[in-house]
Image 1 (cartoon, one colour):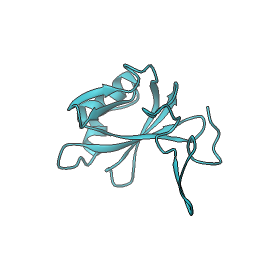
Image 2: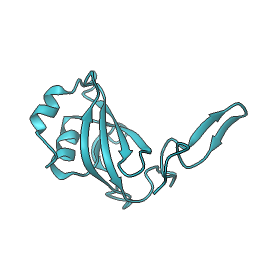
Image 3: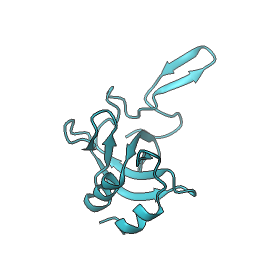
Amino acid sequence: MLGNVEALIAAVKFDGNGLVPVIAQDRATGVVRMLAWANAEALAATVTRERATFWSRSRRELWEKGATSGNSMKVREVRLDCDGDAVLYIVDALGPSCHTNATSCFFRNVTAAGLRSDDGPAGLGKP
């Protein structure tokens, strides 16, 4: 178990829908893999099982990253920002994190010429 679930839930400032944004960052490379949403149940599952778990706003259900795709995330740390209104999962990611098969969901770079696709933030090592 990663830590005290009750302390985490008490410190998080959930929005009006009972959700908080969660950023997943690769422990080895520093690449921001994805952003998703979590409710208290998803955060508790993440801390307890050490697997990135989120709340699907479209399906209205919990989902564990990789449960169907195999592209899982082992959570090594859970961190809160200074205001408690955003959560950071430090993860060991297995496979791509984006549903498009990109390493990072942030694969579109805004340039003077428009959007350019790559496989994530420049200058960071890739798995």
